[in-house]
Length: 341
Image (cartoon, rainbow, N blue to C red):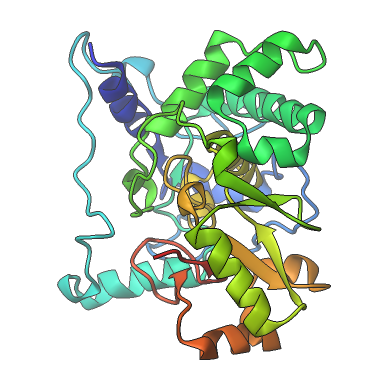
């Protein structure tokens, strides 16, 4: 049996679209899984009629993620037969011109209100909750022990080696590795991300000889076009510009995406509106993020587009951003994300 085909089908078939009774109770009563310092959304954003009333949690699931109950057999493909991956449009083929007015309005409402919760959002299956937490915490130990800069470039094989070599990290267990593979090979169009698959193999690595460390940033850029563009921006915009994120390995993007999924309380659609799933990030092939020195977390909000630095960039004529307003990738507006090519 083709393992990749199985994983692509299994995870997408294992996710659950809400819009039913448990969703409403989850929104109004269920606390966030992990505290992040950010308030939970106070109201459901409507792309369908919200259910009324409150309902008990499924038996044995009084805490944590709440999901409509599924029998495992109902989402597992027959032996030797991969579950079909849903046929959904890619960013290359989707066009708002081909959608009716209601579909256009729904799509735009989601990416304009990227951090809201919609009844049609897709959630990680409840059976993955313990693994989501366990694996994300394990990746956090790797980053903490090996260092932030090294983690940006760390390959999957290097991650495994770090776990075997350092007891403070600990070896990755089979259930964690299987979970990481399922996340990587899942088809994210199932939950609303329409970007290309940039990295086809989870073990793809970034050669250290191909990157340059950027002073005072803790980040790296690929030599050549990426590094040259950043240096040109610094020259044209001035010293107020800073690199906020450069080249990212698959391991780094995996950690970011899993952490975003936890922050979104298991909502894969909401997570993917803000962060490309692992294997789909253009940071792996040269894109980078820039910001204004002293602007802090606002560099990763639409507020950055109002800064003099961004206004200068917009006037240069040779710079493009990867995710403009009302883009077709299913992603929020990211004025900070510089596109290569």
